[in-house]
Length: 219
Image 1 (cartoon, rainbow, N blue to C red):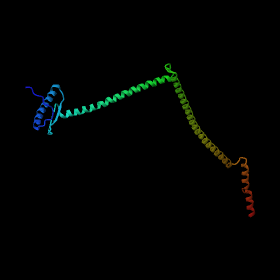
Image 2: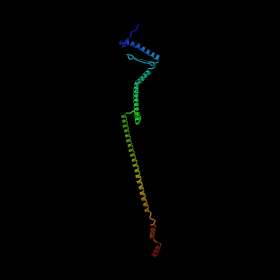
Image 3: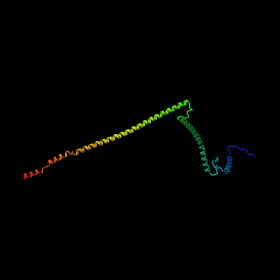
């Protein structure tokens, strides 16, 4: 007798629902175990009945299965972000490559190379660019020269100040030496005046024979 197909919908009769749940749960656990053994697969099954009762099966351990599941789920969520980032970086690299190519061509033209492919308008633009560059170079050169002159003037002022200070110290020392020489000359008498001073001193001293005459007269 061929069994009729059962419509997949909620069973309203609670008793029939419990019987069907028991049979199907047992069959599901059996099939999970067979699949794990036959295919060497890591399997975890978690079931909550309508009454809230827990039924589970794990080929290894439920903790290991759940940890592996969470890890794989996180990696799968990150993969679209990584793919998007890789795509963005590829576009950015292509854009930079094109910019580098344009800069290299511009540099060669500024060096006077590969000008045969340029139109008259392009040559005029290139000429304007070169003239502007020369103008900027001259302006920068003038600024550098002015800055060097400013630094040189500063150094000259410093050297001039040092020279003036040294000259003042030397003049003061020379003046002091002259004053000391004059004072020494005044303190030491002239050699031509020495005999006159000695004669004056001798004339002021008492004479011995006069002393003897005075003694006789008084006696």
